[in-house]
Length: 208
Image 1 (cartoon, helix red, strand yellow):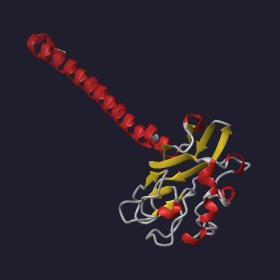
Image 2 (cartoon, rainbow, N blue to C red):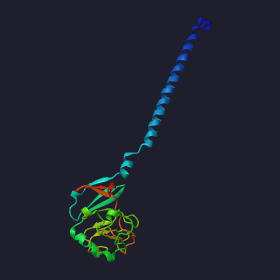
Image 3 (cartoon, rainbow, N blue to C red):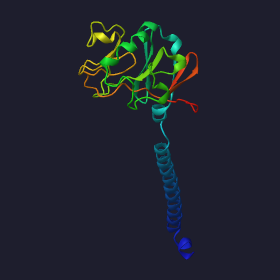
Image 4 (cartoon, rainbow, N blue to C red):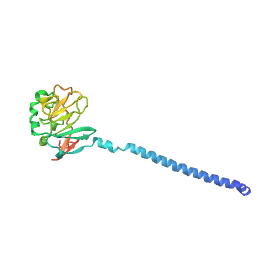
């Protein structure tokens, strides 16, 4: 006390010093809290799945009423192209003629769900429509759809898919020819019909 009475300037310095310490303490606390909040946002953001990650494995709906007879629609599922083809009756009629040209005509290897293990490789109630993963089973290229294959790699197939990379060919049921480097038929993904015009790719339903 005597110091503040005898020397007013010293008292002023003490008051200023205390105020400065309080300011610095408050400022440090605020900055620290802000930094922690920022780190918290980054941490929780990194733990939350992104919309892209959720979409990568989510089922995809497709309106098949838009597909004309003989035409192909491509949708994306899990980052892969998935083909949906509205096969004509004429295309289906050629399937029985292809067996002698194929490696696995009866689809004995498990590259399709059980409900697609039939002559059409599709659900029976919608046999004209086939759903296939559009990736060649050789080295992962994407074959081209050829509705009329009479001048293609294997004209005996009439219609199907041709892979220009290494010459693999698949019939209109996605079955690979015996002369192709690809070892297995094209994959049929899980799918179901939500109604007569909507296919859900990536989910075959509880009753499948």
